[in-house]
View 1 (tube, protein in one colour):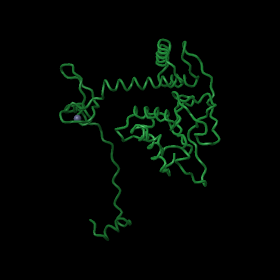
View 2: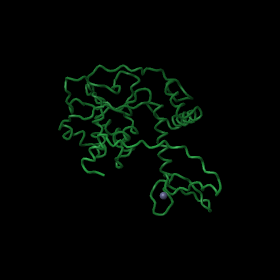
View 3: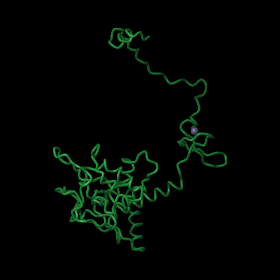
Length: 286
Ligand SMILES: [Zn+2]
């Protein structure tokens, strides 16, 4: 990833950029320093949130996800899955905004969009004009893997399936494949990547759960810290206590032998002649 980028004024003059909603404009511009030399960067909203917007409370992961969709539709990026469920984005016409010194080779950190590679699948309906991307020798990735069918409608590569199992376990994976299979079967949903759909559904479910059960704050009045200890009061009501207010185990009763302290090695004598101490003395520091 580049540490800094020389950017052109053309960005703020671009009609396409100016037509974006404000949040998408922020997402689009703030991501630029993170792009590799071919204008590519992760297209995973969770990773972007963590890397680009760790301290920005006004831009949520959901905002980023939405912004990517809008940017892709506007033809500012291509947003694509690279076959193992990983999402990547590539800025279109990146070279117009960006000058490269010719004395250093360009670095590629992500597979670039390749229209003829069947494992590189654009998210949603994107129009990708020819010649809008950096012209480079495209990196051949070992992406080509046959997809197998799970239940009636779900297609996953062996690697995708393996990844799901390592994430959710055999049973959890089966449940999730079944949910997707039912969705496709009953509602006719169409998805380019079933693997990615399962991950997106998972994320949505988690967000929903978090919204319904917000992490609890400390129940001590006036304390705003997050609870770390779950307690139940006399009426069966659940409450939380923070690190400072949590209830610690009672001290041992009188007469219990104290655990033996390990002996501490004697402190090293101060070297009065070392350079630092000499300097301190010279300055009159006690
Ligand atoms: Zn507290």
